[in-house]
Structure formats: C-alpha cells, structure tokens
Length: 284
Length: 326
Ligand code: HEM
Image 1 (spheres, helix red, strand yellow):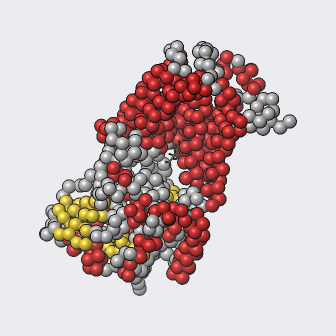
Image 2 (tube, rainbow over the protein chains, first blue to last red):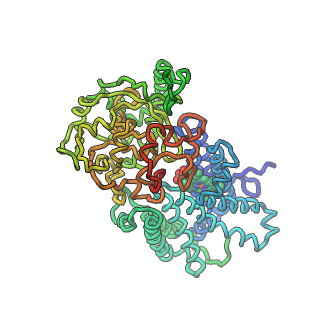
Image 3 (spheres, protein in one colour):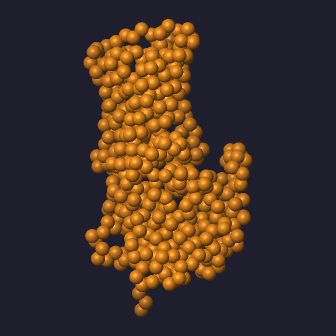
C-alpha cells in the first residue's frame, strides 16, 4: 500500500492531513504557475527566492502553532498534520537555497563564499542545517531510537525559527515590517509555551489575553529597538507609528489581534459543547 | 594621423542593436504584453480606471518625442525591454515593492512646477512644459546599475543637467546641487510612513552636476517618461548606483552644504552620498562584482564607474579619503 501523505496511519483519508498537504503545496503550485506565465517579473529567480523564504518562515510558524492550538481548543486531531507541515518547511528551505544558488549562476564556490561572508546568509545556513537535522530524525524509527533525546533535539526548532526571523530582519533593505510580524508571532508562540510551563491553563481566555498583550507590547518595543540599532531611522518615530493606524496598522497590532483571536477560541469550544481539556504536563 | 582612442561607451558598429530591430522588439514586446493584458488584466484595469496608455495620451509633452538620438552615448549591450524597465521599479513613495507601477499612476504630473533656488543669482519657478521648451531634448542610451546588483540599458530622453545649471546661474560659492522629490502624502501613500525623512532628497557636487553624463530624463523609449520611472523629470547619473537618480523632482537647490540624502540618512552603514559603482567594493550584504542584466539569464561583470570611468574618474582625484563607492 502506498503511504500517501494525506492518509492517516490506518491508510484512510484524513481531512486534517489532506488540508495540511494542500496548504503546503499551494504556494509551490502558485510559484510554478507564475514562473511559467512570466508572473515573476523582471528578476524571476530573486522573486522566487523571496517567495520561498517567506513560505519557509510562515509554514514553520504554522507548524509550531499546532501544539498550542491543540491545548487552546482541545482539538486533538490537528496534531496529525504536524510532521507533514514540518517536512514541508524543510522542503521550502531547500528550494529557497537552490534558487539562491541558481541566481548565482550555479557557481557553487561563489554561493559558498557568499554564505560564509555575509552574516545574514550564515544565519540562514545554520537554520537550514538545523532543519535538515530535524527532518532526518523525523522517521518513526528515529523517534523510537532517540527516545527522550528526540524531544530535546526537536525542541531546538524554536531556536531555528528565531534564526529564520533574524535572517529575515537582516536581509531587509530598510522596511522590516513583515520580519517584525513574524517575530511577533514567534513571541506569541513562546508566550503560550511559557504560560503552559508556568502552569497557567492555556484553555483559559484570561491566560491567552495576558500573553497576547505581552507579545504585542514586546513586538512594538523590539521593532523600535531594531530600527534604532540597525538603521538611521529614529526609534521614537517607529514606536510612535504604533499610535496612528496609518498608512496601515503596525505589526504589533496584528500580533495583538492574532493573540486575542486565539483567546476567543476556548469560548467557541465551550459553545461547541466540548469539554475543556484537562491540563496535562506532557508535551505532545 | 588621427589616433582614435576607444572610450567606455564605444563599441564596434556590428554590436550595436540596429534601430529597426530595436523598434521591432518594442512592437514584439507590446504584442506579447497585449495577450495577457487582454485576458487577465481586464478586471484590474476596470478597477483602476485609467490605463497607463490613456494617461500617456493626455501628456502635453508627448509631441516632443522621440527626440533625436545623440550618437555619442551608445551601448555595448541590447536595450532592455520596455515592459521590464517600466514594471520593475523602486518608488518608496508608493510602497516598498518592486511592483508599484500601477499604484504610481496616481501621481499628478500636470501642473508641475520646478523651483530653482538657494545660491543662485535669482531664484525662480518654472512650469515643466516651459522648461521642456527651453531645453534641447535628445535621446541617450545609458546603462543603469542598481545597488541591488541588477542592471538595465535604457533609452532616456531629456537634457544635460549642465544646461539646467546654466539656466539657474548659481553663485560661485555654491558647491552642491540638492534635488528633491514631490511631497504629497495624499497621493503617495508611502509618505504616510512618517518615520522616513520625506521628501526623497539627493545631491551632487557642482562638478558632478555639470559633468556631461549627468542627465535629466523627461522621456523614456521615445515617449514621455512614465510615472513609475520618475515623471515628469528625474535624474540619470549612470556612473552611480540607481538610488542617486532621484525621481519626480520639484526643486533644484544650490548650496554650500553637502545635502543629507534619503538613503544616507536612513541606512548610513550601507548607502552614502557618493554611491559610485565599483565592483571591488561589496555592499555589506552582497557582492557588487557582477550584475544580473534584466530580462536575461546572464550575470555580467560590473565595471568601475559602471563603464563610464573615462568621463568621471577625474572628478574624484584626490578624494581617496571619502567613501566614494557606497
Ligand atoms: C543557506 C540558507 C539560506 C540562504 C542562502 C538564504 C538566502 C536568502 C536570500 C538571498 C534572500 C533575499 C535577500 C535579498 O534579496 O537581499 C533571503 C530572504 C529570505 N529568507 Fe533566506 N536563505 C537561507 C535560509 C533561510 C531559512 C532557513 C529561512 C526560514 C526559516 C529563510 C527565510 C527567508 C525569508 C523570510 C526571507 C525574506 C523574503 C522576503 O522578504 O521577501 N531563509 N534568503
């Protein structure tokens, strides 16, 4: 029997895995379509490098969101999509690197020297090596063999995501808005983890609201800090921009919004009549 | 005997793109563009009202183009397709994506007044069409090298900046020419991002501004210059990285202070006042040794002063202490 990615372990079609598979594949299909129809513009390789980089970090954060989502909503089945999504992150990262090398005219020496010389590329490379290690130890056999050490190894994924976000900041020409947004989502995820560890119930809207506020504030502060340290733009102006919603709301607001939306999820669960999840210390 | 020294811009006649092929390519590109536009962009055009083509017809300067080509400024590579040069642009006033040509159609280019001010005999303002009437328009083929390691070859129309400096009659104490883009956050949404030092400001020394290469472009591909490329007038300094070439200029100010330029102010570690092209001086995040030629699979080696060293190298004699190449 062929082990299709959208099937569950018993070989039956799983809606959750099917949806995750579609999500993981859609950006690649769109990219291929655009490449074939000239939609990537004047510098197709650069554009494709950027799009794959964006999807690497986005899918990575989606993957990391599954465990907290499960605790917040009590929707246990969502976890069956985790390995599939995690592997797709690695696939996009490899595609991203391959496109970069292609843009260097497949000159491997040049690509390697650039990766060694430019700090932002070195950071990306370290993250990619880490993702490769995690992908290679994602088989059932590896999980069994590594036992408790598997948990420890795979917990480094949070640090790898942080490196991905740092690479995103470092590569920006001046506008770091989207890098800030990704950092904010990462902070939200870390906030949920920290709350869980501190014994606060993740199914409680109060906990989630506190985390949302903290992540939003930290996002605004760190964004201003970035501009203050890494650019000539006055950090005060960046911080103050959070108070006006023009030309568009700053990333901190989107992070706060996402965090508060998550805080509403337990209420939806109550309405759906599901029983709150008992808080278990084990990590899925 | 006449000894002819080969200069940077010259090339054997056989390598130049013949005019007929060049025009033919334009038609071909227009033809290629027509299909997808008809099929896919109907909704977009309907949504945005006026198409760029319609805006062009309304331009009162349209009859001035194509201007006569100045054969002194030819190129060693084919001219970049018009489609590419007019749809791949940096114009932060409209947004930080390269894909802002559609948004840029909101830029109002008439009436347009240019002010000449600062250390000049007599400051004045002049309407763009009056300025165009005073200036000898010509077409030049220039290489354009972006700091982001890509390049194109474009047919600018316009006039030498030196002619405008003559018209302005600067005082002898003036050392720099400061040029500034329109500031109007009602039509330029990017300018509502208040942490940037709007308006976009650039500058040249008077010696650079009066160098024969320094050019004010008012047309492109034998037509009035499109908004996304800096209508109704923008600078072209082909030996410098593209960000020096300030777009949609509203004022030329003569001063004895070196202007603080836009990119120098927001990212002083990466972009400076001089910004001369040099393959040996990398950007902190990438090598400048080679460049991707837009619309080709090629990376070609970048040349010192973008291949215009014969014209401009002398400008920088004795300035080795300056950061000339960033
Ligand atoms: C060897 C590994 C890597 C290389 C060589 C690499 C290279 C690049 C390059 C060349 C850019 C564009 C920079 C520019 O245009 O100035 C970029 C952008 C980016 N990369 Fe990577 N990268 C690597 C690994 C990663 C990893 C592991 C991630 C995610 C976890 C990632 C996420 C991104 C993102 C989000 C962007 C910005 C895209 C955008 O804003 O459009 N990269 N990378």
